[in-house]
Length: 483
Ligand SMILES: [Fe+2]
Image (cartoon, rainbow, N blue to C red; front, top):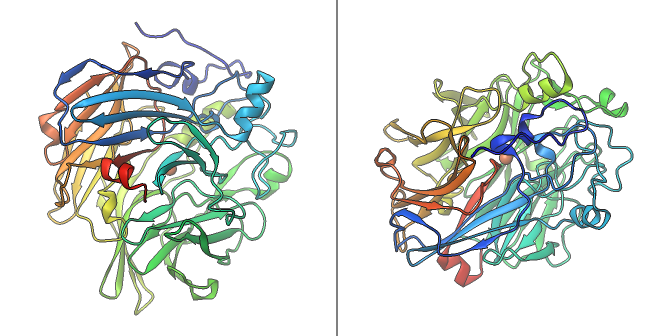
């Protein structure tokens, strides 16, 4: 049975991001002996983890989808069996609200002035660590899109391990989507904030300490969401979508897209100084997510999901504007930055299909990769991922898979088969939630043959609300304890 509509937003307007497939769940569950339709491959060993917003208490003021408390849902695959767990991310703010028994923070749609505390960069919002989940040196790090503390979690038990300080070397905050180079063990990150320095870029070395941190100059406060690495460089972004600072001074959160400004991509040697950054200009846009980036002789190739109209002509209530701003509308796009001439070449890869939340074989991050696995974004008012799209950037081929009517997935990371070395030799794993039934399952598909449908469907004991980012941690990573 579908769940009843639950409205827990003080505005009184029904908020679709608190209802149906988005409605938060209350229980933290550990479940084994799950019902399986088909057969779980015995050579699929590791953990699928997905983060997302899950409001614990009724919102204080208006609720934005990005405000919800972080909750990780995980499925551990081992020798053809699967176990499910879900746990809240126990941030400092979560613990404070748990002790109070109610919401103490307002979200991004309200004036944050009276909130108890914020991040170290002067943003007075609740760090919910609800955005991504990254495996690093034996731990899972949960991160927040507005920059906060990376909260550690055990990848199997989901036990809270507290705020990660990288052996007391992290100053400031940490963004949502750091990039791990598995070959060197380095983790690349940035943080940003409303005041100077507007951007800091850093490297956590293989030993787990922040070994490098510089402050590239930006013309003002920006909202970078992702970054890229190649074998020798990192790529940072200065995109013309940013917070209106006049509105911010009045306590309002308002975004401005300035079509007069170019998009700028800053290419910096991995351990380069701030003055070594080289900025490449391109057409104005916004980018949430990078697919991958690599070097080809004197060029840097970077594939992204590009948003050409990041500020829809929104009208109506603040809730209506929030819903239209949140709606993903992105296309696969390729940039080439010529390190000799300083010129940028850009081209659309797939102008027809709205796809996002890309994943690749993570072992190839920063190296040439052939395949990308994106979610297909349904043509609907809210964000619903109705299927998967595999892109082959050598042949240009595209293969799609639909979850079927009223069934919506999550980011679907690539999970290599045990011992596999070929790029496509493995599986895609995703939660799939049925809107009408109010139930969820995990689907496992062959990465090389999506149209064949799932080889296994693992029926879960509760609904998994639609959420944000996911990762796959291989069994050899779990054993090795390294990134
Ligand atoms: Fe993201």
